[in-house]
Amino acid sequence: MTSVPSSSVPPGSVTRAGEWTVARRRDGSVRAVSSRCRHQLADLSKGSLDASGCLVCPWHGSRYDLDSGEMVAGPKGFLFYVGKTPGYTQMIKAYGTVLKLRRRAVREVGDELVL
Ligand code: FES
Image (cartoon, rainbow, N blue to C red; front, side):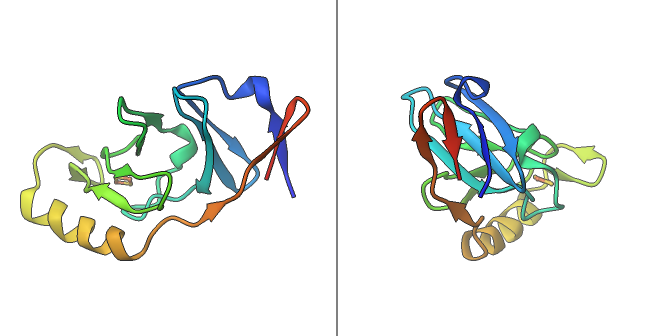
């Protein structure tokens, strides 16, 4: 079990809690998922939330649904390249649709988020 102060995850932010990435969407809901991007293992706790509440990878912009852990948009690039890669993007998305991020329940206990 791990926890982080609730105040360390304001609405619209992402942080790390042990091996997990914790995100609080703008509607206040909190989700925790595994922290390694299914593309090239970037640390998703360094990512961000987009306007629709999806977790966006900091390296190539893959997007994840926090409720299912599914990759809903593939990467735009690979290694140090960031840009259009249409066929490659769809191939990785197909993979990320099946091999979802793991999810972990989060409870607010007092001033802490407990996983
Ligand atoms: S490592 Fe996450 S999109 Fe490439």
